[in-house]
Image (tube, rainbow, N blue to C red):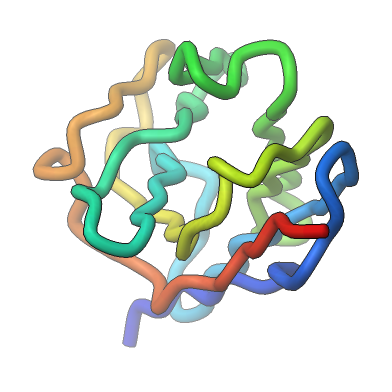
Length: 127
């Protein structure tokens, strides 16, 4: 059974940092493009960023560019979302998603392109 599990969410003060993890079980993440998405209350789900399956190319939403970094450790079968300089507007449930595309040197931010999703982890930025 293919499963993605996010962890690392929590409550943090504005300006603080969190590192989210997306761990896979039942399959190897190495051949997958990984996307990070978030959904705030009463708002639509939006792309945060993504990382390609080959070459480690990343893309980010303008709202998080320069503050968030996505990386992957295929040996640990895990992808990370490092979030620095957090703002109250970053408050949301964060999801990782995977799409099997082993030859992708680029990644993509459309949620419909991803087949496997985690259950999400809550991030709350508040003083």
